[in-house]
Image (tube, rainbow, N blue to C red; front, side, top):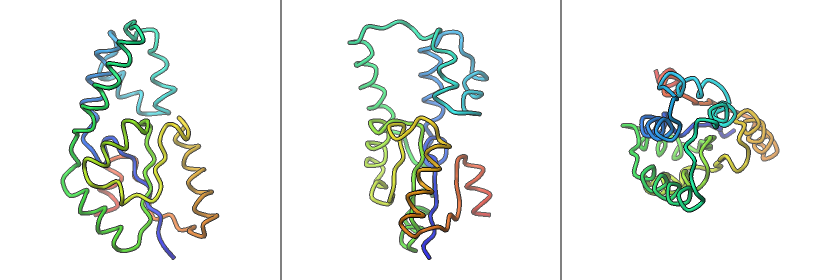
Length: 167
């Protein structure tokens, strides 16, 4: 029976958290690093919404320009050392690799493609599927149970989870 392994993207596969934190804090004056880190302790989209009143006001043109720049910058992020080899090894052993990320597809797919790992994932669950990660885990579980792949080997939402699994 094939094993299904679920990964998070930001901070697990890619070193994107410092960049995302910097941008979020710049765009939400008054938010501290501690506050930003707390956003990640729950549903990111729900927690981030709590600071929407602090977000700088922008025109639609400014929002679109920012979105394009953010996507371009994020797509240049690098994988953590050894991650590509790990994913290739797991994929070659027949594991089913799944990505469950809070990021939108426009910020996910270019990053995966630029790093050469897009084709290693059998299922990519972005914010378009749901902004609730728990709901996406349920969708993933339902999908793979229906596909006769009930064995979940691991869910890696932090680098520490991945490190623990590998040790």
